[in-house]
Image (tube, rainbow, N blue to C red):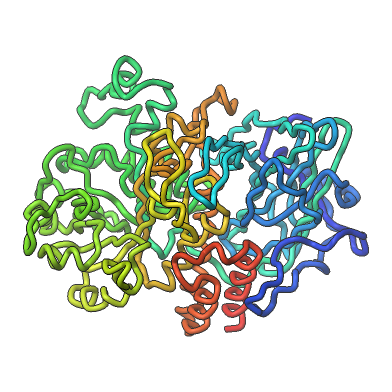
Length: 622
């Protein structure tokens, strides 16, 4: 049966009572001694409920799958040479309004397999979580030409999330069959979005696959916690916006010449290049489904009050939470003031006033200067006219100047009091030492933060997480001793992709910045190398109809984006526990998991999942 609707994208049935099978994967035990890690849902109610195939027909529950399938949680990466997970049952848990992933791995056997069909129905428990809340992706492999650093590895890595049904148009896509060569493994990524009104408790289902005449079933046990996550994150993000690259990448052309001219077809009213805005807003919309704000995605800011209608048409839904189709209410947390020329106080005021009048919660900022220390922006001690002059223009309008710099540098060059958002690099947020005298611990910023309520502290990771070096197209760094950090490059562990937000909590950061999400989008399918890292600055792929099917091009998210989303949700757990009076417990669990910014790789995915469960148990205990 062809996959022609979301209900035909994943089959979820139920495990009958007493059905034999292996122990479930997921929510594993951990050296952290976290309480409450036993897998829930083994005696879930409603096991004889009808409609197990999504069509209310009432079939017998399928038996566990054969030896060519295995299942594991999402904080892992399944490469072609990875071992097949031993279990065909998975135990996952989630709050209401939370995405929760798991992975179904398939073994190619001696002669290879083609997975032709994956179908889904409801998960049954205290209520029915419909099949429309289950989203299935084929994990597309990307070839990394050479390791990003000593922790990486060349060869194929799973990264692109090829949707069976996309999140923007809800169109079925022709990404099946999934071909699994002999002797190799491939994987499906499965996201469950728990409805915000789902009753807490235990739900049971299966994922069913067909490969030719072979069929396999994976049992899924979901525990829904008795609390909910907000759609718009508490932790602000400013991931570099899509710029003009998506339009060009989808049109398979350069940034100049006839292909670019198509993207730069300015509309007659002078309100912006509509095709470029179309792609920018699509990428921003998909990012919001992943709880990420592409804070620099606006193409043209409103020049005056007459341009507000066009601005609202293109970006209003992204700011008021009405643009997303699935994670309802997800809105931008940051909004860059874009001038298309020199900054202007009057023009900035139009945007700030409009954002206030519309009740948008996004922080309006000006990316005043990027890395002034390395760029030589402030040549003299005691002052920095390039920063001071721009801040004097935008700040009176209520736009917050943002500079990626440490406080020590801002103070030495006299701009610490004119910049509202300081963004130090993650690597330098430690105590100084003789070897690293420029380090500056998080506590050094307390007095600056207290001196003005507008002062805000973000931080960012960069190529320094894997070792900077090389030109675009070249992976690998001479700094092979740069290991253990959170990282967003392809050939790093899932834990490294997910860890940043745990550290944001322990370091009292208000937000995170990342320089780009589409930096080398035109070369992303080839494992684009930049700044010595595979996929550094490129978190999306260009999903053309030639590649995915359907009638509309769409952005394709990456496994790295899904893991960043998981980290943002982890942050909400920690934030909620702290707000309920359990800050000491939240800090203890997070600090035991990741005691320092360069010790992330000391922990496994199982340990991270157990720490998350410990936070959830502490929330429910209160």
